Length: 163
Image (tube, rainbow, N blue to C red; front, side, top):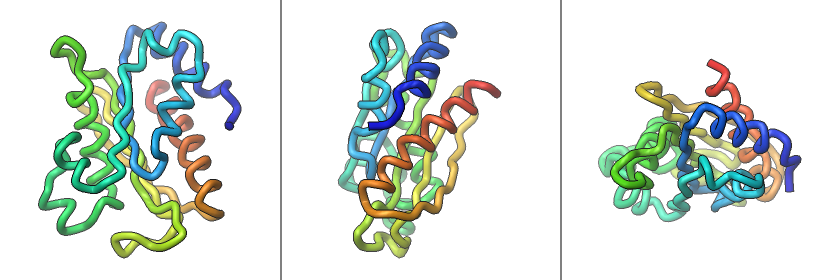
């Protein structure tokens, strides 16, 4: 497990600002949403998470463009952006989408995927009309890469809130 302080800071800031968040994960398999859930009171801001590990679910559940997935595969910056944006609506409560969406997609190993080497990761962030992705090139074993993605996701989420 990682240090809970970054997640505590983020959850506190989201609650203070009255914002909600939804999480879409692939290679992290629920680790990012679990990190946020570790924080007492997270239910006041965290709507939930979707683990779209199978590529087809990125389209059917999160609304990622099927042609994009077919052409480039799941490990792609545009896929990360669409996952982050799509999870806001996928996890809407009473018709209200989440204010923020965050996503993770990439290759934790042991083998390359979609023509991308192990350690290639994209984090998607969606807040208001701002939707972007962050590229990461990580090293280590599968567990280390997945853990690093969670840590990096929290850093970039905090940066988003500071803008």
